[in-house]
Image (cartoon, rainbow, N blue to C red):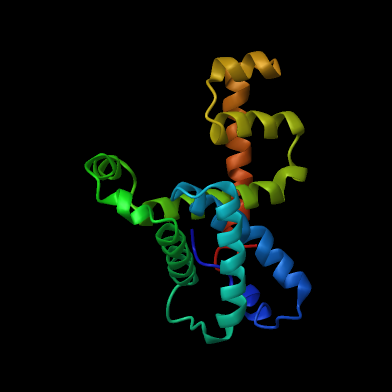
Length: 189
């Protein structure tokens, strides 16, 4: 997904602009928490990391330069916070054991985890923005099929729909999502 729009980044440079910070927080806190959880932190730790990141962003947003992507800059912040947390718990010692190393070989690269979480967070944000424009059953069919990856037969039973109706619902919502996505300034909001 493209980077955050420049206007929102510009607005949060004003630490007193509560509306912009609320908007920023509503988009990026779930991303930060989700990524920290994927990296192995528990819910409390992930929430704490997200808060630490928000504080770090507020402290250094005026130094952020558009020459680098916001996505990369933010990933650097959270990666450092997560690594600090992992060190604090001495989890790095576990990384030296063979069992843990074998587990690590099968786990995703943090960069891929970040990209997946980034895209999912922004998809859900855009989906929430268009939810009121879509019939509830159409939205529910899309959500169950695309987001929760439920089998078509289960969705048809649950919603009393035919398979073709689920596919049509998916197509309609994707069309609206694409339109919303295309209308985003630099990819967000």
